Image (cartoon, rainbow, N blue to C red):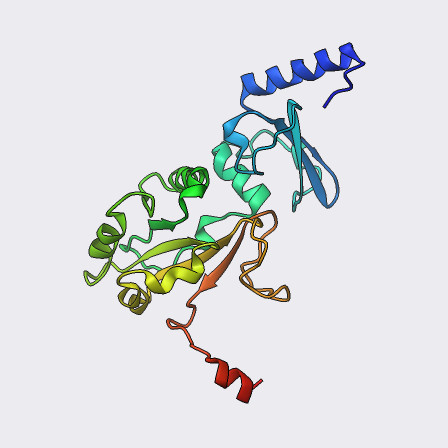
Length: 245
């Protein structure tokens, strides 16, 4: 928070907050290998960056690594800067690029069918993902586990009809319960529907070892790890682990 003994600074900070809210924007300061994003702390549209804070400060900051090319801000105006802000922020801050999460598909196939398996406590994150998916592809079909009957509908319309393409995002807190999911076997057997574990860095006990370094590692707070990459799962019993350490 601004120094309470400095009325001028409090007034200035309040003015900055008002301007950012009015412009629906933030302030970005870039350095060689990292950047600092300053944004209004009380606005819901920024809550996807970090959990809400009880701080009274009107501003918050977020530090992240980046791959910006120095000097591009002074290039000619012919450059394209029309990309929607939601997809641009997702790409720069979280490394989110939808094309990297889609299954291979040929012309005429539609892979833009998504299902979000998230707990009720992550409703805001579900809304953010749905908005991001629609911003990337306006005709995306997005379903989520928070809506009753949506899983049955998704399975019915995406298996056994020759259009078995899609993506299922699983929040890390739900990954251990996937075996309870109806029709899981038939979904995995299609081969065209990908499962991704979504980690938002809030779990106290990571699902994967700290040495894991898959090709899907991203810069930022969100991390995607492919589930069932071989189309199956292996059950290792305690006796096997004792016999084959």
